[in-house]
Amino acid sequence: MFNFASLKIYKNNEIMKAFKFLAMMIAVLAMSVNFSSCNNGDEPEEIIKEDETGIVGTWMESGNNWSTTFVFSKDGTGSMTEVETTSQGHSQKTTLLFTYVYTENDNRLKLYIDGSNTVENYTCRITGNTMMLDQGNTTYILKRV
Image 1 (cartoon, rainbow, N blue to C red):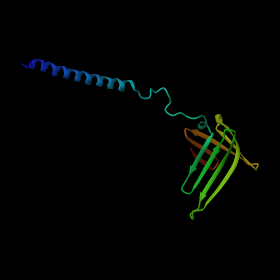
Image 2 (image 1 turned 90 degrees about the vertical axis):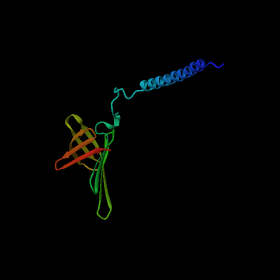
Image 3 (image 1 turned 30 degrees about the horizontal axis):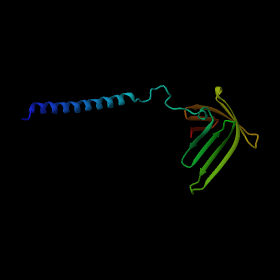
Image 4 (image 1 turned 180 degrees about the vertical axis):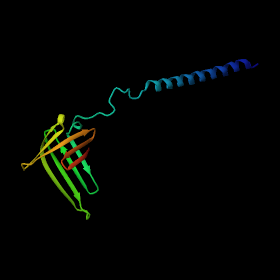
């Protein structure tokens, strides 16, 4: 004769094995999620490259039909390029090459224009990625590009 009690124990034993296996998988999953982490906050949010600090770099100001771009190199040379577009769509581009001296502690910038005796003096203020150059009636508000 067939013993139904042993069948019931066998089924319970299989259910317990499946339950233990499922519980073990949930525990492994929980631990793997627990051990992975996000940023610990020790590193700065934005890493600033050495050539992106101070005046060195490319700075631009633009409007509807014009743009002015200053490029300041580490070696003390640079360029200023102005581009104007006429209503007919023609562009006129003017580039001046210069050497510069920037005194950060008193916000002074001197541009020595190549090929002439012209020296342009500016008051220069840099805040983050914005540079403001003041020269009498002319003010440039440039963004780092």
